[in-house]
Length: 607
Image (cartoon, rainbow, N blue to C red; front, top):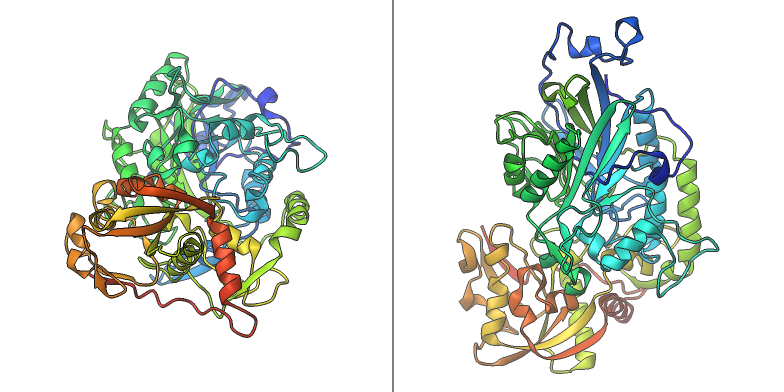
């Protein structure tokens, strides 16, 4: 039977929980039910944790609730970002509306009922790239919400570094924002839970930026958590955000601290890893272990899981926004749970870790896990509603302002997306106000966080785009930068979409009107960009000519593996990219003449 802790008044966990320096969250998967050591089965010995003579039984179920990549989505996400796909018994699928902190709180609290031993952990990216209600206030609202959700511990994600290490420290420890000050009459208290960053080191001292691990303890049961983020964080975060930091190998770091925890007598260990994989199915409840253990998962987390020390009992992962509960064999060939709960608070994972009091370790063969939908058919948590209403009231004068009109959904989905084209066009138009000779604009797909939906999100009316909706699309406050490149450099930048660090998982730039080319996915590496097909306003790119190119500041710094885009000349820094989008929507749409979704026909794809 799963174990959880009963509802109890909120307490500051820094002082009232045993914090033995930091830990990660790892697990979520379903291991085959097997008989535990001893004369009785797991089910017979679990229960209330008591044996004959009122002595604790040998085995104690510990409930591990986990989620990842919330990204400040306190309100229910809209469009495809607010739905999950569920596989039906007959093989068909259906979509379910999911997410929203009011519902997540209710689901987690219901899950904990009747479980005396319950811990809640997260896999990073709790904040960053957040909607207006959180992002406008430097994500203080999300930290307050996580405190109310009784989150015990989380690893850091790459987006926790969007505003730099000092801001991450403020989110952990509290205090008013150094520039914007306090938003209410109460000082921001910071997170009640520890952020763990075992593999993120201060470049000067060589020591972890935050605690590397944390130990949860109830009575005689102890579980250690080690937290890491992806080693490649500097490639996907602005250089300023990771200045002075070093990101070490995830496996080596986890193995190092697993040994340290065992030396301290902690043998049950979960790794919270902000790195993930790519599941074989988009349905959250598919069988990840068919046809064999772990066969349904690929990508970086598969390699990590196969190499992390057998001393670690489960892995809670994230980053790819995918849903999976897999059993991946550890280096000793033993089954180990690897889980991820998609993103935006649409799912949570409920894992049962069976703790063996005799050994102090987890009985791996008894571990069970499953992802559950944060459905919206349950009562809203009143305390979360009050929190959302408070911050919405503060954000309303800014967020409710109409900035444009659209005739239908403008989605971010696809290799080339309608919204990607729109944003690139907006940046080109803005850039030409700075330099009329600007030729084109390029936009990274990871910087587009949500679609623009036609249906009203509030009282603004269908087809009206509010500032809050645009903020959700582009929340990073990047600037629009102009640089000059040779034609040869421009072609090389396009090839970097599908080669180098982007070879295995291409990042296709969204392009402004006038730039066209063919992407041949039947080929490999850089050859997938057909050089002779690249045209600007119908003319071939001249390798020796100069081109004025607009990008956001992230790409202009060589982000996402586009090193060539960091080598331009004659830099000119403009306003932020959200302002460019706002100006474009206002100038090109009205109530009577809404903007239609772009055709997304600038890149010809051969498959």
